[in-house]
Image 1 (spheres, rainbow, N blue to C red):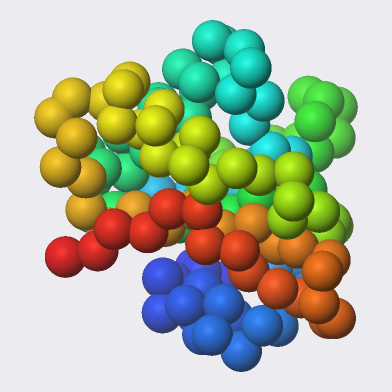
Image 2 (cartoon, rainbow, N blue to C red):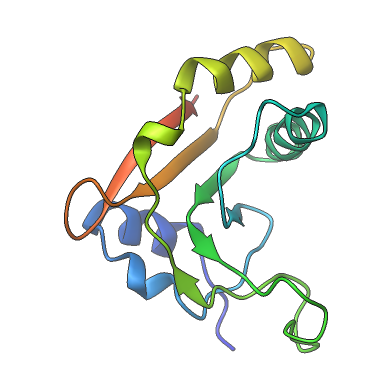
Length: 139
């Protein structure tokens, strides 16, 4: 399989052609979450902080909320390390309180000078796709 580059991901995001993500493999600059982080649970706050800090400790990256990857070991491919996107799900953007995400990132990550991280929700509010920026800090 041909390597998926950050430039290709940025082009897909820019063009809103999210079905092109199907078949792509998560990697060191790109992670998918099937659903939103349930920030009423400390374990999910910890997961969000872990995901953001892992990108902050590298060269930055994207967390997309909505693309589905295999959930069981049986469904996962043994041919590559990352999970493969198998479906695009559109989520209700009203389920995400951006301020809560920012609070968790600020409270759970030290130092809070995070750069190069983007968290976006694929939303069904607009057709065909809408990206809700939850967190974006570049530079």
